[in-house]
Amino acid sequence: MATTTSAVPPLATLNTPNSATTMDEKLSGNFLTLENPVFCCFLFWASVLVIKMLLMSLLTALQRFRNKILCLLPHCCLRKVFPNKEDLFFKDIEVQFDDPHVERVRRAHRNDMENILPYFTMAILYICTNPDPTVACILFRVVAIARILHTLVYAFYPVPQPSRVIAFGVAFAITIYMACAVALDVLKHI
Image 1 (cartoon, rainbow, N blue to C red):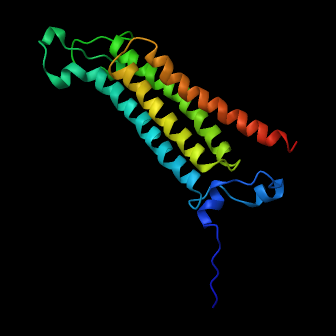
Image 2: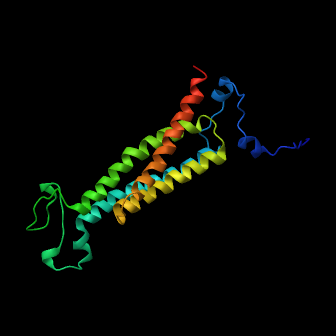
Image 3: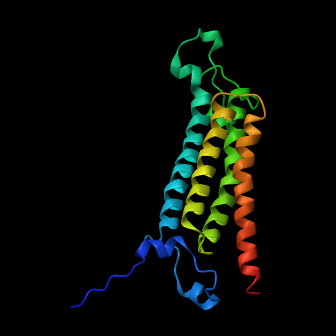
């Protein structure tokens, strides 16, 4: 059994996508596998963002019971906020829709759903264009960190603008970049 060694390491071929690849070669390659480092990087950071979004649901519930759980304030200051009559299992509580703490967390969660879900779609399509792994992984990391920072400055510790706009804008711009990269890559084959 003869072994051959080449001057180019196998991973180096992944780092330099061949711009001369034909459409048939791109279609024959499956980029959505665990052998693709770009896809693995995306899976990790997408998992981080999904966990963050799930924790936002728990944070909303925690805000509804916040003072009841902590028991730090007198009874007259306790805050139990419920949006539905059937959820009222405490005595002497009325339905309330406008608690600022709960609404802030809900708005941050809604913002996540409005921005992270389209990002997931564009990131998967972007991976299918065989991007440079270094650039793609940096983009995935930056989006995840920007969305986490957005949640921190919006829901946990409100900070004056432009902190929220910057965190939002970074992730938004990267999603737009990915959409343009996919569109331009596909456009040359139409």
